[in-house]
Structures are given as C-alpha cells and as structure tokens.
Length: 177
Ligand code: GNR
Ligand code: NI
Image (cartoon, rainbow, N blue to C red; front, side):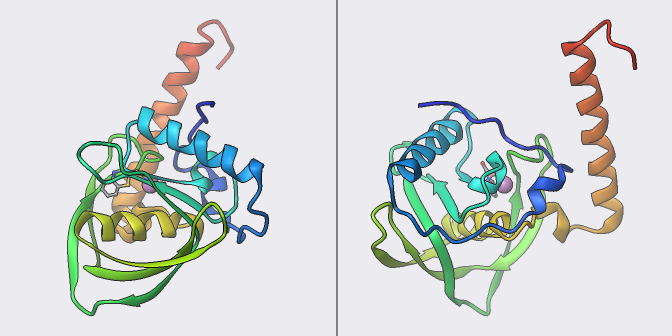
C-alpha cells in the first residue's frame, strides 16, 4: 500500500481525459488499493485516478458515515439522469479549502465495471449522486470550480497559486525566489 500525492488546481494535468481500463490485472488492483488508502487518509468521500495523475477511468468512493463501504467504479457511464436538479455545497481534494454550490441532476443511474471487469448498474441519489457526478467529471478533466463564475474561478486560482508559493518557501527556505 502507498499514499499517492494529489494534484492541486490549477495543475493542467487535472484537465486530461482518462482512457477506459482494458486490463483488469494486478496493476489495476494495486492502483485501487493505493487510491482507497489515499482517499481515507485525506480524508475524502471520493477520489478519481485523474487526481493522482493516472489517466484511466477509475474511481473510489465511500459516502458512508462508518467509512467501511468502499465502492470502486471502473469505466463508469451515466445511463440516465433525472430532470430535477439539486444544489450541493461541493469541495474537492484538488481544490483544498474551497467550497461552493454546484447544481446537478438529483438522481442518476450508473453503469460501471468492478475490479474483475463485471458490469453492474446502480441508482444514486443524495450525496452519492453528487459524488459520482463529481468524480466522473474528474475523469473528463473537469474540476467543480469550472461551474462557478469566471470571477470566482480566477479568485480561487490566485489563492491556490499563492498558497503553493508559500508551501514551496516552507520546503526550501533559502532557495532564490
Ligand atoms: O471529499 C470530498 N467531498 C465532497 C463534498 C461535496 C461534494 C463532492 C465531494 S468529493 C470530495 C473528494 C474529491 O475531491 N473527489 O474528487
Ligand atoms: Ni474532486
């Protein structure tokens, strides 16, 4: 097991398009184990492979209160979405400290594969529906801040870049700036 480092917005690698998984092998199982460990440690309710710089369609999620209901989604597709929508205050491990309302379909039906390549379908609502759609956006290179106004997005970008510079200074206090 290993903790993976999570890319931070505005890293351009967060906008890469993930490719479908074709090999359901031990390498995939290792990636899933490492992503789950990283998600629980963060802590977060979901993590997409894109966020750890792996551009394959892999998601881990756990929206349970007990943190013992790991869900693994490989090559997920939304096969149905409700017309009614809900606004939820979203956050993202790749956009630390930022929370804002995002409107999405309140229910979705998802088809995805498990670690062995078997296809499954399930319906999601509430927090699970929010999380699935948020994670699937990551696989398409979309971060939730892209649903906010350009003004808000630019403020978030500046704030995170400034924090990034401060973090670098702490790591290398004597380096030239
Ligand atoms: O941990 C997370 N919490 C969260 C809260 C509201 C809406 C979406 C999320 S997902 C986020 C983890 C994450 O960044 N996944 O990509
Ligand atoms: Ni996220």
